[in-house]
Image (cartoon, rainbow, N blue to C red):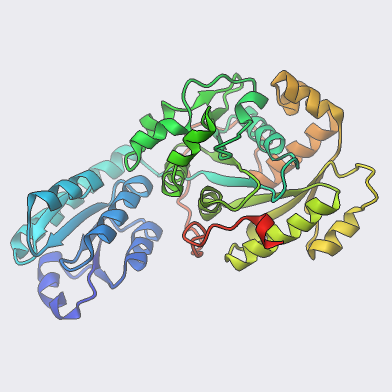
Length: 402
C-alpha cells in the first residue's frame, strides 16, 4: 500500500492515476511517519513536490532505521545534482519530476517490488524493550542497578545492550571490569548511517554475553555526541536486541530526553535521604510537565533498609507516588563493583541480587525467568503509543527546578 504526503488537494486526482486507488493521503510529516510505522502493510511513501526537502529527507533517514523495507519516492519540481546527491545519502530510492506521472508510476512499481523482496529476506522486525534508569541526584546507584539488571537478563539468553549515556563521567565499563577499545564517540563518524554492522563494531562484550556501548574515555568527547545521534543509535539498537538498558547522568540533558523518547519503561531511583527524595519528587514533576506517561515509570528505592530516620511511607507521602520496588543496602555491592563483577553474577542468592532479579524479570522483561530464549526469535510488531518528544523540548536540569 502507498502513503502520499501531499497537502495540496488539487493535484490528488492526477496523482491517483499514477499511484492507484489504494492510497492513503496525509498532509503532514508526523502523520506520514505514523502511517508507515504503525501500519506494517504500508511499504511506500511518496513525498509531494512542494514538501520541504529537509523534512522529507529527515523522514527518510528515520524510516531507513525503523522500517528499511519501506521505500521513499521523492517528487521535485526541479531536478538537479545537489538534490539527487542529498536524496541518495538519505536513502531515497528514486527522485522523479513532478510533471512526469509515467516516471512516478514506474518508480513506485520498482520500489514496491524491492520492498517485497526485502520483507521476505528480513522477516519480522525485531523490536527491543528499551529501559532508562534515571535519578535526579548522583550516588543513588543508577550504574549498579542498570548494569546488574542488564547482566541478569543476558543470563536468560536474551540479547541485551547496556548503554552508558553518562557521556562525560560514565562508570559502566569500570564497574563491569571492561577495557573498551571503542566507545560511543566512534559513532560520530557514522551519524545518519548507523546499522547493525556499525553498532556491532563499537560495542564491548562482557563474558556473560552482555553487549555494552561504553561512554567516551575522555570527557571532552561528550561534546561531539548530539542528542540526534543518541536517538539514532537507540532506534537502531531496538532492531537488533531484545532489551536495551540505558544508564544516565543525574540531569535532564538532551541525551537523556532522547532516551526517554524511545523508552518503554523508566526506572526512577532514589535513596532514603531528604535531598534524594526531594530530587525524586522534582524528577517526577518534570517528567509530568514533559508529557512522559506515568504508567511507563517505576519508582525504585535503593538501599531501602538503611537506618536514616526516613521510612518508605515517608517517601511515598513526599512524592505522592507509591514506591514500586525496593533494593536492600549491603556493603557487598560495593565489594562486587570493586571487583568489576555484577553482584547478580558473583552472589546470585544475595538479597540484593534477588531484589534486582525480581525487577529485571518481573518488571523490565516479564517472563524472562523461564527457559533461555532464542537470540533471534521473531517478535510481533508493536505499535508505539504516540507521545510528545521530550528530546525536542528545552534541556532541563532537575536541580535547577528546585
